[in-house]
Image (cartoon, rainbow over all chains, first blue to last red; front, side):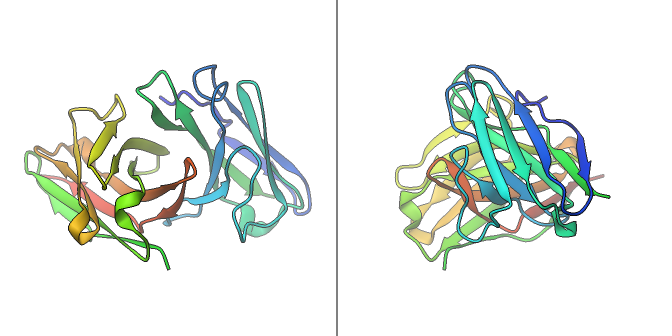
Length: 111
Length: 117
């Protein structure tokens, strides 16, 4: 099982703000920056947020990230139907041979 | 344009060996780490390990150490993931991805490996 814990699901109506949490420990989120990935069905993951709160070129501004201590969160403001998919947090873990670790994943549903 | 193109889907029997590939183009292949990620059917993402093609330095997740071998041939800009004896539990989609500023920005399209008798 993953060392980063996310809620299995989150939901909201179009236009609402949805937040996804990611909980870790001192050796991972407590020491390293968090990245967030979006994965549409049948496709490769897409980098959504890197270094806690940075958006790669082309990622809509409605996606934002933050980190505090051993927890992180991804916020989707102005939820849209195309945001309905899976999201994963990820970071490096200094206690696991410097491994990269993914969160358990959260399925966002647009009601 | 940076691209990572993976080899096609494979169907293998338990106990057989397999090597899948990930070919990079549009950048200096030798100077970026390439990671491998497993996704079992209906499950989440699992990081397997990483290789630096420039000198073939490799690191494995403790969960995958000894279970797979990661290698690279920088002369043909290709990274590999291989198994010596497949198990049914190796059935999954495997992704390669390029490491940029400690995050994976460029991804391959994925290779589906099915292990079944």
